[in-house]
Amino acid sequence: MATFIGLGEGLIRLSPPDHQRIEQAQVFEVQIGGAELNVCVALSRLGVETAWISKLTNNSIGRLITNRARQYGVDVSRVVWTDTGRVGLYFFEVGSTPRANTVIYDRAHSAVNTLSCDELDWEFISRAKVMHMTGITPALSENAKRLVKDVVVRLKGSGVLLSFDVNYRSKLWTVEEARQTLIELLPKVDFLFVTLEDARSVIGLNGTPEEIVKQLRREFARMVAMLTFSEGGAMACPDGSTVYYQPPYKLTVVDRLGAGDAFVAGAIFGWLNKEPWEKCLANAVAMAALKCTIPGDFAIIERDELETLLSSSAIAVRR
Image (cartoon, rainbow, N blue to C red; front, side, top):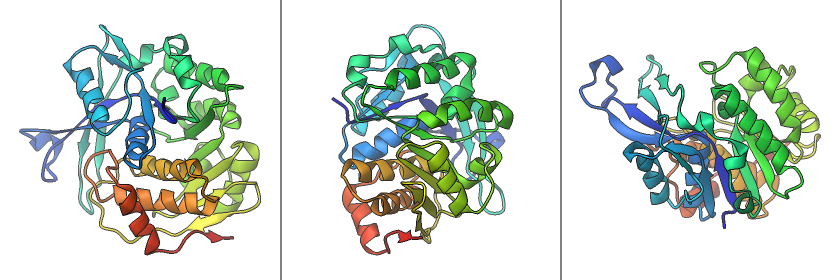
């Protein structure tokens, strides 16, 4: 039985070594990624029983993804397998100031786009406490959008709480398309995660960060809204009026990819352990900071590492 379930696409990540440009590459380093899977790995490393559900091609590439997830303790027994379609790829070119990182997706027509709500093991899902999805999945295709909507409807009344990260990707859909879909979905979400930039540009909220996180909680999230900032700090609003703020850590960035997913894992980990919201927020910011020091998408972080970092910093401030 899994306490936490992530539902979404798994991808192969290919990166040229030593900060090379993609067009220079003679070889590529292989990593595994996918927002929902990243959260599952991070939580599993912290001791939470997790499962990841997706649809993959029944070949060595698909098995590479599940093998890597299983290596970090994630249950992949409910992955749906298919003999058709493909596994999505993305190429990640690691930059160095002032050259930005570059991501190129090659994920069109991946197998997850054919996944339907009826293919999921709902008896298995109903035993979990939290299911996590992101705004990436409905951006993939009309069928993937329908999958997310159907899952949200099916979760209602099941007792399983819904965690959702807006995770807007401009290469996958327009702001207008995202807003139309998300405004319908977000009022059904229990745990809501969104960047300040996405809250303003995609959801269309205005005001100070404090005003925005309160509005997110009042209008959408049923349990807590968490707002993250590009410089690394974050806010949480659990009741529509109280706001907690956690400042960022000073760090040397090795790889930012997956930091937002590590943030989600830290927050959910705190909630599962019945910690106060300010501690949940502190967990989240610390997990994101630690992830930035680790190559690849996965936050391979032990619980004692998290506690050590938290013990050396201040817990969230109530505002």
